[in-house]
Image (tube, rainbow, N blue to C red; front, side):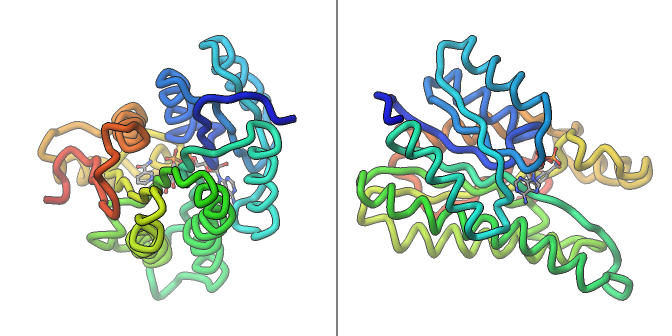
Length: 248
Ligand code: NAD
């Protein structure tokens, strides 16, 4: 079905956490929303309902972004339904932390596959659509540890640093066709991903944040909302840290 849409945003891994907050914020901004999720869960239907109650259209598309053909299908279903994609937010991510000397090969590979290759896969499939439109905004969720590194996260920091490389190369390749690519690098944000960290790690992290609080999903969603808007039309290839001043 190709229905007349205004602006359409696809958000990967949007069932919860930062992705969910981005979906709701972009719906408030007037976007119709494609929610990608990996596993079936009732919370996705609830999210679709919440977006629709804001007067926007929304569909949920299951798919694992780390699999090239599944990423292709996510983008295809979005275009089949809405006819266009104006914004892609590559948010899906996982951690499998461990010290370098003990890290298993599979823990390295999995984190690279989801965070880094998943980002490539979605950009690879959305690019032809945005090129045809001569319009589009790609926003990748990196991390401050992609800039600074972090003990216990060689896999995750490598993936998040790689995302910064993908962002800048994409920005250079596609800028002449009206497509912007930027990244946000969150610091310590309160979600399921950080919930399991020990009290000691949380305490140390708090001391390293000049603004003396952990970030919220809304802090990240607000920055993504700005990058997705026409207010950011002259910004491309940039990485915006959202970290209470952790990295400066
Ligand atoms: P989260 O675990 O709450 O959400 C991650 C989402 O990604 C989940 O919905 C999960 O199902 C989805 N996902 C995982 N693998 C997927 C796959 N293969 N295909 C599709 N979806 C998949 O975590 P979050 O904190 O909301 O993280 C969102 C993004 O922000 C991630 O990229 C994460 O690395 C990044 N980030 C988070 C923090 C933080 O402090 N929470 C800091 C920096 C960056």
